Length: 182
View 1 (cartoon, rainbow, N blue to C red):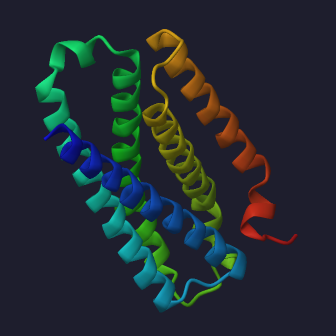
View 2 (view 1 turned 180 degrees about the vertical axis):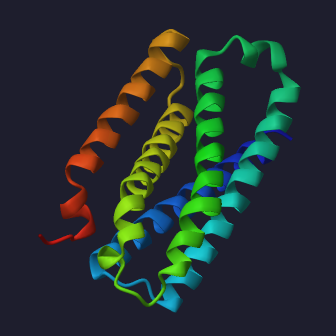
């Protein structure tokens, strides 16, 4: 039974992370192209479904594995750090799908960088994208490691440090990332 749960968990990670990476890449490509087409909106919706499907599979299989050995996992830095990061992924996903995607849909077929609301929101969209990519990569890395040689505070501190660094870099390079010409 454990092997089936692990396989389900790995499929959840692959589907969820894959959908998230496709969503992020699609947003960046559309921003650089300056126009989000109806086809790109459809792909964004499909990728979003994949993210939530993957997260659902990931969470359900994770709960089942947790129930098999709760005491061991509650004492595991790796487990608690992964759960914290998955919580960030879920919260960021809610923001992305309830705030950013509807905004992008309203700009379908329009020149996004010329829109004053897009200009205002693009920093927040990039921040959300950087949180998504960094969090998924950290969760996958933690899952692949046999153990974590740090305390929980150190592990989450490294994660938060990465979030801050990647967030700052995306803001500094926002014009380049979005293809905005001055």
